[in-house]
Length: 344
Image (cartoon, rainbow, N blue to C red):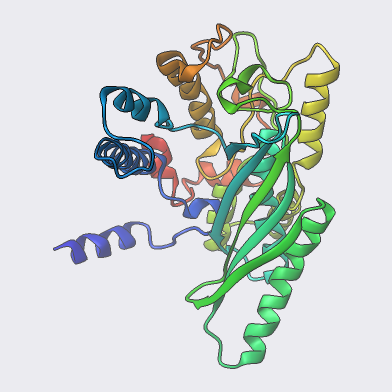
């Protein structure tokens, strides 16, 4: 039965990670998004041709128009919504992030969740403007416990958002089995052209755009997945956990600003950028390489000869790792997402 299969899966990996390690695997997610997108395309085309969309009667010209209106799946960290009424060509950036807590301190967790949610905006070169929160607090014996937990978690998040000049404008709360927090973040990029032609625009960063000869730059050391998987098993030293938490509370905002200034004021151009989270360095790097290949195959309405099919070579000794991460991996301790990352 399916129940026995689920039970066997939990026995094989009884400790399920929180944080980024709680993501659905990239391969599964890719198949799901493809299926949903194809269904939406079919429904849109059928409704268009049957005259269910205002202003169209279903002739051949409308069929061509319906096909041209279909939006391809993009590989970016956030959605790009052009502001057509703005002559400067600005764009809104929309992204959402949510995960279960992996530590016992709700204040620290709130800070980390906010930094993580803002990173998608930073990876696009956008300035975060507003955020909506989705908070889950564990079932508690008294109302005062729920209240104090929520105050601590949202206070930590608010400190981060305020420092980034991003206003918390609302949200939703509910009770659940575990502490969890996420944000829908809305950012802005000034002087940005249409997203279909944004690859050559210095004011926006995309996943695609890597070129032969580019060097990879990491803004933080990696290894949180293995490190906190070890911590769940009481096999990580306190100093390692503390270093990791301090790193996770550092915003990528400054790094994003530096990248944008380089693109505008120097010859050292950042051709592509992404946020490295639950899929790991290799997984997110693969997304960047695939984004280049997909752009070459579909062209996405652009005429950009600068997009190249590229590969990448990583030197393990040049990658900065958090203290304790390599030890955890050597002990065969990985995040619960690692098997899916490996297959991808």
